[in-house]
Image (cartoon, rainbow, N blue to C red; front, side):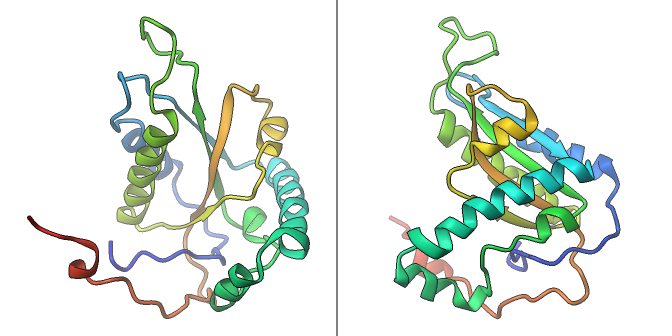
Length: 191
């Protein structure tokens, strides 16, 4: 897992769909408040839908990079060579749009989801880990706002966009920044 890195250039080789479905199965097995299972995973492989999502995401990102982003954040992003252009959204074989729901379609007595965002975050961690173990590369993408996902995918507003996970094999020419992760002793205290 320590070798996992976000990738922005993906090979055109399409992974077997069963790898993607197995990763989603793993993610959907995660814990959730009152077992409400508040997540929804939309696997997108259709080129036209990916094109519409890319256009909408780039419009959102252009506004962010040009008008909204604090200068300090833009400086911090320089090593990653990011900007508003998001070709990976159409080049990668799969996008997984992850949603959380505050209304439960699971059999909770009240019909509510508890800790929907937190539970969905745990599910995304399981999804990313499962994809990594399967030999796939990923990028987590969180344009703000992401409501265009509901429109492009025909999902009502009870589905709250959480993240887009871009999935595929790493392209040979992919840029991977030389970054270090914090040491265990920097992030963990044993009492």
